[in-house]
Each structure stands twice: as C-alpha cells, then as structure tokens.
Length: 305
Image 1 (spheres, rainbow, N blue to C red):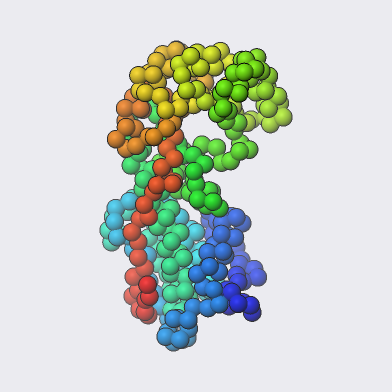
Image 2: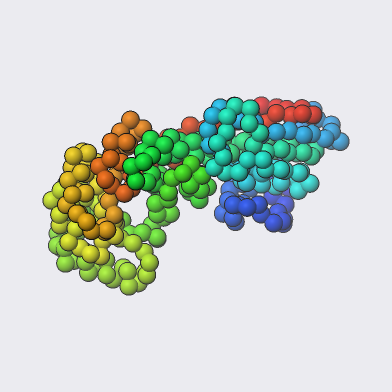
C-alpha cells in the first residue's frame, strides 16, 4: 500500500509483460487504485497474512480469449512475487472449463488483484469473441472485418488488439494515421480539384498516411473514383444493391478500396460482404461486446466476490 489514502503502484513495476506498454501499464495502475482505494479490508482482516494461494482463471462459456497479458500484469503489479503462468494466449478458442492462466502466491495478493484482472480479460475476450463471430459470418467472401474508433476511452490499444485476436483487422488508431473526410458537402463545395489539392498537401506533409472519403450516393462514388489521391471510399449506409453497383463502377481498378459502414449486424454482414467490398467496419465489435464469463477458481486459499 502507499503512504497516502489510496493504493499506489510500486515505484518500479519491473519489466512489463508482453503486450503491456506504458499506456496500458498506467491504465492498470488506475484500475487498481480505483478498486483498492486505501486498502482491501476483506483480505487484510479475514485472510491470514501467511496463507498461500493457487488459482486458475477459468472460462465459463465458449469464446475467444484476449487480454491475457494485461490480466497477468495486474497480478504482478499487486505483488511482484506472485507467479503467473499463461496457459492460453490471445486468440485461443476456449470452451467452458478451459484454464486460461495459473496464479500462485500470497492469498491476500491474489484476492486483491482478482476482480481487476478478470475485468480486463473478460472485457477484451468479449470483444475478441464478438469479432470472431463476424469473421466467421463472412468466411469465404474475401472481405475483411475492421473496427472503428468507437472504443472505451483509454482502452483503445487493448480493444483493437482484442479485435486482432478475434481475427479482425484494425482501422485507423486515431485522428493521426488516416485522413477520413466525412463532411462531403464541404468538400464538394470546392470541387474535386480542391479535394485533390488537400490530399496532395496532406500526403506531402504526412508520407504514408492514407486518405479515405465518405460517399453517401452513387453520384459521389462516380465523382470520387476519378481522384487518384483517394485510397479508400467509405460507402456509408448504402443498400446492398448500391454497393454492388459501386463495385462495378470501380471495375478492374485495384483502388480505391471500398469499405462498407453503417448499422452492420450479424444478420446483415454476409450479404454486405457478398457485394464485393473489401472491408466492412463494425463499431459494435467494441462498443457492444458482452464480457466473456470467466472466474478465478482457487485450489487453496479463499475467494471473494
């Protein structure tokens, strides 16, 4: 514990686990401070200080696991002497009863870290599981499922890693790694020449950054197909027949890539993929995922809610 009112992380957490960068490390510290506060009174007063514990993180439902290293880091952060053995890596399919990781150490430390560790793993596993359902639904079509920026604030790198674990792909990480022009009425006011000029200037200043432009109508698709500086066209809330037509309008050209977006569900995604678009963005991968059911089962020691 720290010497103030709230739990504070050790001054030097040591080497971070795989997949745990400094930003995630800070998030773990915030989550632990939120949960522990001035101290875990249950463990401190009801669990003997010398009691040792051994437990397994166990799946309670089918799914795809993700966030394992973040969960493991939580246990290590609470107590550097805790031994954590990862059994299943991110992207592994799991069924009820599957062991995800084994944890051994002071029972107090295990119990203090338990809820925060599970929160990370079950949230991220829920995203990986939902992503895998979408990926399976379009199997064989040639299209790819991609995520969006509709992520939990502060969790973006973790949630996008969970999408990868589920077989999806990442769209842009933020406002800095792809230009996405959505307010087309503002762009069109200056004409295609103005759009091209802006794209050229952006690419000159930011080499490697792609340009994506939203199209809401086939008329806009036709206009933007003539701008070679556009790398992606976002087909926003179009009907399947419209998207098929957009694919036909592009013809044999490799670019721009076509991305479908807007209200995509498991019931509709297959039909969208069969239109011939390369990418289908699904905000629900992250903002609507249901946490996967996981629990910590103790072989020795005690447990708490």
